[in-house]
Amino acid sequence: MDIRSIRKDFPILSHKIYDSPLIYFDNAATTQKPRCVVEKIEEGYYNANANIHRGVHFLSQEATEAHEKARRTVQKFINARSSNEIVFTRGTTESVNLVSSIFADACMNEGDEVIVSVMEHHSNIVPWQIQAARKGIAIKVIPMNEKGELQMDVYRNLFSEKTKIVAVTHVSNVLGTINPVKEIIEIAHEHEVPVLIDGAQSVPHLKVDVQDLDAEFYAFSAHKIYGPTGIGVLYGKEEWLDKLPPYQGGGEMIASVTFEKTTFNELPFKFEAGTPDFIGSTAMAEALNYISALGLDNIAAWENELLQYATEKLNTIEHMRIFGQARHKSSVLSFLAGDIHHYDMGMLLDRLGIAVRTGHHCAQPLMQALGIEGTVRASFSFYNTKEEIDAFVAGIERVCKMFH
Ligand code: PMP
Image (cartoon, rainbow, N blue to C red):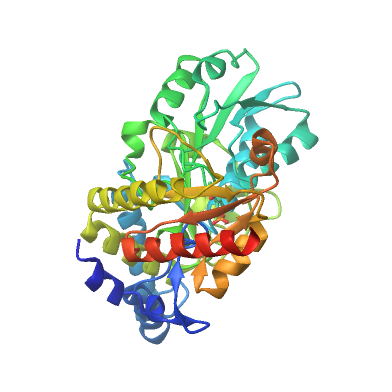
């Protein structure tokens, strides 16, 4: 990959922050957008803006076709069997809320259990807690070892006849751990339990094939994969989406409405009440096409090289603690340098133009398991360079000197 020319596709990367070139290492929070994605949004509003699906007029039909084409692009990108299995949502958070809400309603009773992992983002914990409070269900937690890998032997023993669903993250947004989701799903299926995978941190970095994984549900957000904010995807196996009840009511999701009886639309529209983000969907498809053209294997190889390079360099700094040493790891580096507060480190790096994230990263139970309040997190994208990592490491060394 020609990183120098790739960077030209992302105008924001040439910005200066406090007179220093921007070094953007907050990609796990959100990614920057290539010009083609931003242009797609502009083009949508200028040339193809009309509400979709019900319109007989030209513009409406064109917008509808663009939206449905975007759905097929998503389908191909994750290798779903059918475009009926692709539901557009507001993002991972809404996708998880959708599944937890309708699944708990239709398939869970008091005393039933959901299995999650200790490294979940709050968006795959709190929705289950809301259902726990509503329905009296229990949450079981897969623990991890000191490297930040899930303890699969414990996981195997968490199942009981009360276990109704497993919901785990593919990649940890804090530790970078790539969880063995295929094995997690296989084990759940031995117990005839369906699985929801939080793919927010996986789809931008590794090839995801939902048929190969055999997950019942898979959730992700467009903004983390170089697409726009406010839109994301819930993949669901057709047989499951078919039998589950709708999430929200409104336009689009019905077949017919009378005050006596309403019937619901076919998939995937049954789950898409109201006007969808039809500009966002086409921009998201543009982002997926951009990624596909670069090639996820190339992306993974370069990001892994950046991760190894940064890890080696960081390890040369005195009193450096890196959280997450899994064998299979994505390009996320969480760390603490001595007793320097993560917030101080983040603020001082910011003064050097370096954007990192600090805090609990919406994973407070994980922080409790690690016995810390928060970390500094650098997360790399294919558009990052080794020179940026050199500047980052020099920045950390400078902050360390200031404190000692
Ligand atoms: N899960 C994980 C693992 C994440 O990293 C995030 C975003 N930080 C989410 C879920 C939530 O994604 P969104 O805010 O786009 O809904």
